[in-house]
Each structure stands twice: as structure tokens, then as C-alpha cells.
Image 1 (cartoon, rainbow, N blue to C red):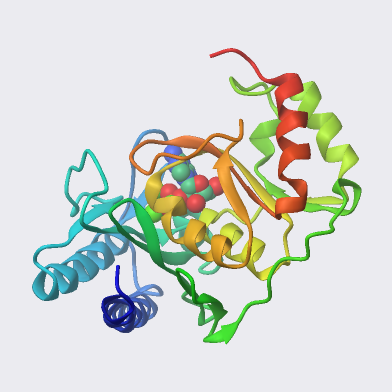
Image 2 (image 1 turned 120 degrees about the vertical axis):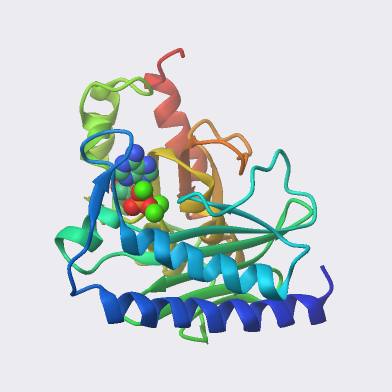
Length: 270
Ligand code: 2AM
Ligand code: CA
Ligand code: CA
Ligand code: CA
């Protein structure tokens, strides 16, 4: 994508994500209609859907040739990432949104012919906007983020990971993961994959391990983390597909091999 086009789309996406954030703040303290999806803890509200509708309307009016992949059903069914594709999560961290009214974000990743060009993660209540343009760096409220320190030993790493890693699971032997959490400095669980990616980019987390994420959970984060020198792959170190769900590792490059080797020891055959 040429730089003028990238800049034009970045400006529009920024305007719309701020607008969507204002929209959420204006409605979030009123009564929400909460329903469940795949299981009793997989929640969605009318505001998740209405925010996605607002964003998709703006995109389709201005860029009728662009495509959309999104969580709540207003997107397109795509089989590849050819052309310009907006990958959207209107509220990432819906459970936090419902229970805490904080620790959730809007996530927008924009890809062109399979390449991540632009990423936005907006912490709506904190009013903090993380963003990135491919080749031009990553920003927190338009201030450049530093390149990640490439010298973090695993023993001093803070890693975000869900507690389900320590319960019986289909991916990695629980004993291996219990040993893993004892061998690092600390773990954190924020409940918003997008914010966890943003914190890795900011360098306040050294990595994030997730059991099963969808394209809209990670699309923006991948671009932002990439711009500060971080790496995102599956937990086996393979390239990600942005068309399916996967277990994901995003981290400081100095830790990637070691974490993947650790996981390999306890990896269950699927
Ligand atoms: P969501 O809030 O947009 O659904 C919670 O640990 C993180 O995992 C959030 O980023 C959440 O995104 C994501 N997630 C993905 N699939 C989920 C599911 N089935 N139930 C709850 N959270 C899910
Ligand atoms: Ca959801
Ligand atoms: Ca999500
Ligand atoms: Ca969501």
C-alpha cells in the first residue's frame, strides 16, 4: 500500500475509532441487554453490536471496495485477505465491559493483500489510543513507543496468560505450564486480548500467551507489536492465519524461542 493511501486510511480510521469510543461512553452506564453466545460465559451486549454497526457503516460509505471481518456479524465472509480488509472487534473484553466498565478496547487492524498496514487499539475508558502504521512505528496517544528491549531473560519476564493454561486443557500439559509460571517473574491476566497485545508493544508486559483467539482479537495487535520489534506466532512458532482461530504467542523477540521450546515439552498431540 502506498504511503499516501496508508495515511488517508489511518486518518479516517482514527476519526471513527474515537467516535465509536465516544458512542460507547455515552451509552455504557445505561441498561445493557446482555445475551450469551457459545457458552454461558461468552457474553455479548447490544452495544457490542451497535458499535460494530456504526464502524462498518462508516467504512462501507467511504470505502465501498474494502472488505470487513468482524465479530458480531456485520462483516463479510472472506476466504483470503486480498484487497483492503478491516478486521474489527467493537468491544474486546466484553466480560470486563459488563462487570467492570473498564479494561476493554476497540480493536481495528487494516490489512492490504495479506500485509498488516495499520493497527488501532483504543482503551475507551482510559482514553488511551495505541496505533501503528507499517514501517512508520507504533504510538501511544501519538507519542512513539520505544523498540522492545531485546535482552529480557525468561526468569525476569512478566507474561500475560489466562488461568485456564493451568487447568487440564487440550493444548499443553498442565504440569509443564505450572512449571513455566514458576520459572518466570510474574503472570498477569487482563481479560482483553487487544489490551494485552498493546501492553506487550508498550513493553510493560514481555509476552502474552493465549489459548484460542480469533482474527479480530489480534489483527491490530500484531501490527502494533510488530512495529516495536515484537513477534507474533502460534504457540508452536508457526505463522498465523487471520482467517481462523489459533493459540497465540506474542512477545519480546528475546523470549520467543525459549517460550516455544518450553511449550513444546508439554505439547499434546491434537
Ligand atoms: P471478547 O471480549 O471480544 O469476546 C478474554 O480472555 C479475551 O478472550 C477477550 O479478548 C475475549 O474477546 C477473547 N475471547 C475469545 N473467545 C472468547 C470466548 N469464547 N469467550 C470469552 N472470551 C473470548
Ligand atoms: Ca466475544
Ligand atoms: Ca475479542
Ligand atoms: Ca468482542
